[in-house]
Image (cartoon, rainbow, N blue to C red):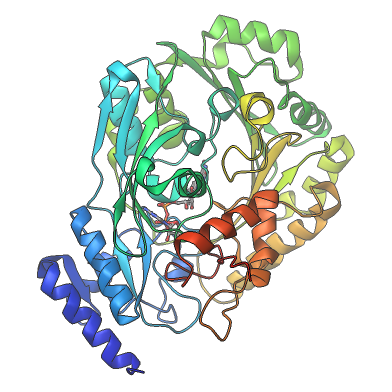
Length: 505
Ligand code: FDA
């Protein structure tokens, strides 16, 4: 077998024969660290202890992606694919274990081509959600895409993990709205939907990034929305009445008959913020709230009417300045000052007023840097779309998703404290959330729920993948592993939580 050093050298030689030198950065290149950290979003993975890539390929053409895969396969060097770099465990640019690998960075591949006439768009994986929303909003005031609430998240990773957001109760998840895609497979071939077949097309729409190939672009179905939508924000200090409002919110979230209305709840410290997006006018929103959720007390004065694109800028960039420029959504600047740890859960039975009182009393009010972001399900995502439509399985019967976030600003003791808080809250929540399995969302990646083991044959074992995989994908995990067994049986595309190949004996 060739030594690691020679396979790395041969790999770099292969790359430099095919790809222009200015797109390649090795650890000794002067620009290496700035390119590497350009889209790192979590200070936990920007330390000297982070296992870094041997090189970064900043592909500016799909042919470079194909060349990188072919060189990597030929010389036994794996690629970590990076679109927006938001992976919560940093798996798009670091390895947990010591390993020689390269980062294939797609930030230069970020065109968005909107076709308003057919309500569709082709978007490259390296575009951010903000760039997508901006392009859609500029092309038409009545078209939209049901994406998430952070403009710097990469389209590639977002859709690879299913992608949930403020309009999924009306239009489904982001990945439910993918019509076609172009993927570079483990042989370096470029395949569209017709060429890849329906099994692989199903798997890439939510089966998690990295596992099946490099998705270079996606054709999206755009949704028709009113010219004017309404946003509202209610910020309440925690007390007995807020506990009662949360208890009502939990069940209201599932009401299938108001899919035009989403109320997201964000609980932090001693406060709860309810963020509302309604696909209609303020007066209709107030009427519905009076009829179905008077406890929240939404009044016309709380409403802001605007276009959908402006609403996304308002919600994601400012939440106080309704004139925040749409161009703000094009800003890709990252924040390297914050350390973050995330975990997730799904709630199928309401926590109830007493439950909320204990969550605040025992956990949130004691730790201001601990947050719960809760996305209501129900509507189309909960009742119309079957659990197996895409790999995202958390649909029928789910009230809402919880994302737990712990922040801190310095390494060392602060990390220990923050991890203690989030683990304490996660432990407390166990009897209140889904079980067998305790569901989790792949886009809120959490390595604590399990990591792959590689067998003597150099391939990830199916059993090790089941441990975390059935939490993310439930009954869809086995189908994902079967697709992986067909398209990448040698397990070239892998990381600590990639889908293992299921190879029937
Ligand atoms: P990144 O580039 O780090 O990739 C993530 C994973 O996908 C990695 O394993 C990577 O290798 C793989 N990958 C990336 N591009 C690929 C490609 N083209 N082909 C194959 N594999 C690829 N999620 C959500 O659903 N709704 C939300 O509202 C939010 N909100 C949110 C806010 C903030 C502040 C953060 C940091 C994150 C979110 N997320 C989210 C989670 C987010 O969707 C998730 O982390 C995505 O994987 C990020 O995609 P990126 O392309 O940015 O990540």
